[in-house]
Amino acid sequence: MATLNLNIPRFYCYLRKEFLYDGTAHHNEFIQVCVFGVSSISGRALGFHVLTDNGAVIWRLPINALCHKINASPMPVDYLQFWDCFSYEITCTKFDRLAENRVKVHLKDGAWEGGQYMFTLDWYGNEDSEEAGEGGHKCAHIIALDNGNFGAQPNNRLQWFCPAFVTPFKDKPDYITNTRVWKVEREQETSTGYFYDSNQMHSQEQVNLYAKGSRSQADLSKKHTQTQEHTSVTQGLTEHCSGETSLYTISPKS
Image 1 (cartoon, rainbow, N blue to C red):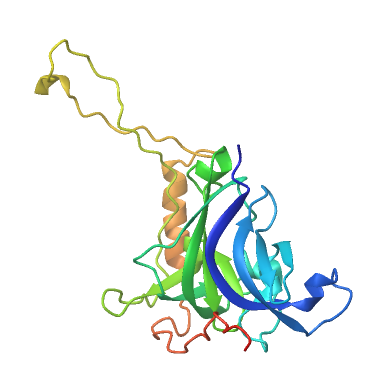
Image 2: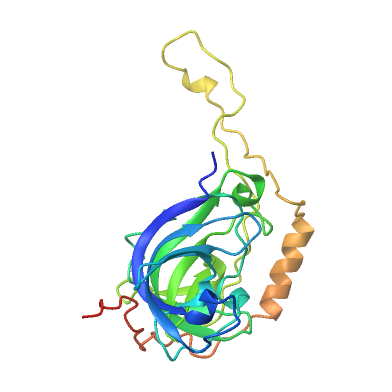
């Protein structure tokens, strides 16, 4: 049975009220909500489940319906969430090493926006969610952005900060997407003995299982050359994201 609905670490924020009226009324008005869950429908944007401060539960809201600052400028949903859901099967993890870390998000228009890590959503159970390659697997890190919105962004749209360990890159790295899948159960002889003899354990070259189209050595060389010639220098990447985001937990009304 598909996961579809999932508990997430709850957080309190604002809901843009027009999403309670199908976008027809109450623009620039807000209501306080507790966000407690998410739904994943393959091929659609994430849907967040909220409990309003007047006692209603609202289902499957897009991420641009939510904000943690009332003065946050609305942004298109495809700026805040880069990929549609890959599967009905979804997981949620708050990674200890990333918890509360500062991060910069590379938005669709080329701008960088600072933020703070909250938790990570990831998919499984089908080819799109598990395959390697540029057309394969992506996760969605949920970020409280400094501009007051929330983002759901994959690894290759983010730069992380940790003064104790990270030296922020100045030039964008020329890394390329992995297209290989690793396996450890290989062709080898079996033995009637309890322990295998060392001469029966032959190391063999790993097979490249290219995903969604092959990548030849020529492709790799061309990609590397193009990347070197077109390395973009992003302004302000060396700055530690000093602007602190507002708390996305809102105290209950007295």
